Image (cartoon, rainbow, N blue to C red; front, side):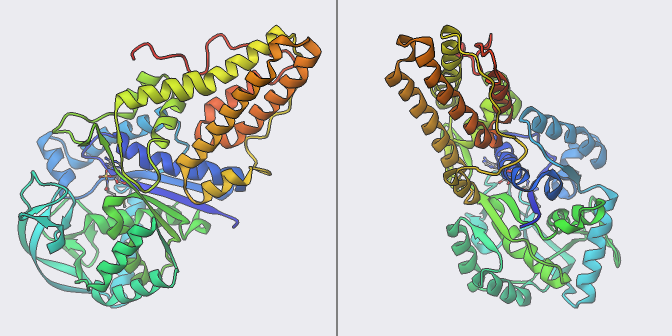
Length: 478
Ligand code: MSP
């Protein structure tokens, strides 16, 4: 593989970022950092951004007495700040209100129409503004949307343009079954295949009653359905940014489990209809709950990424806590108590203490030696246990593996007891410890980039001394 293109979902600007959004973005970041190590910065492209059109944004902006665009402009910096606080190294932040994106959307829709996959009809049905979608039978429980049970779905009947999804879905199913693109984890693929086999209806791709969107090029009384506009972001960025065309098709779309249908059926149907190559992998992660409850504004339990950075003192601590909180693809319940405990055991008493301990021993035993650290922009020899977990998106397992190695080193120090040895004898042990720690900075840098760099500086030598503040100071709030 000579290039790698990873995307995250683009976030609705009706809300400010919370740790659910942060998880999607962190997964994208880790994948991107791994490929940047393998292929270099120039051959890896990591895209994230915001989803700014549609009825939901229009409504929230009206409540705030702002134009939708001004409202979006006020929220976008919140996302950028959050990603900065988490040390997310994205290459481009796309906004669906960017005229360059809008142009690509229009071009693609014209092509789909020219290819005969769009027709005009009447849509009658229930619409959930929260999901920005028409509801089908299986979305309903007691007549309400399962994901937004507090909001009554709106009955809508309007003239719409439709995509021939029914016809296209046979080709979509074929491609999934032939493995032309992958849906991960397997259980999500099974769900999609079984839903496709039950048969699907054509879908509406324009809205007559929503003004906040991209006007349909051949009928200005309609705007393009927000999901169609949003999905195209993954493709449009590669078309309007200079030198990025080579990145399409995307190698992986990172998404949450709630939007798998859009990313594995609708998106592919649109691309097939337009004659554009399909993305290769769609990875759906699970959902976080907090103390057993859904993350929601009305429950008042929303945690922002910055709140966690403040509590745990560094972006790396938060990256560690979020990425180790779940098995990729599975749901996980989180709580401050569990995060506090994990911070103390794995970071303060774990890695932080190990580094402090080895540096103190170096001081005690007058250890003087220079070391050459692995190059953190190049990956000649990442141990296969790490790379295979990384390529299978088992992020929590990479971290477990790494912490096992840190633990084993700690245990070895206990056995060796270098503090009881002569400086010369202890020096032989210390050399092994430092080399091992430095070797582990390479996989570590994908997850905890600042810590990996700090560790390399600490152990550069020739004189090694304990840092004045430990890498992960013990929590005082707990
Ligand atoms: N705008 C659409 C995506 C369009 S992509 C072409 C959207 N936005 S969102 O802001 O509602 O959600 C963005 C991401 O956050 C999704 O991947 C979603 O799964 C994720 N999460 C939202 N809440 C979450 C949790 N509680 N836990 C984990 N991830 C969650 O959907």
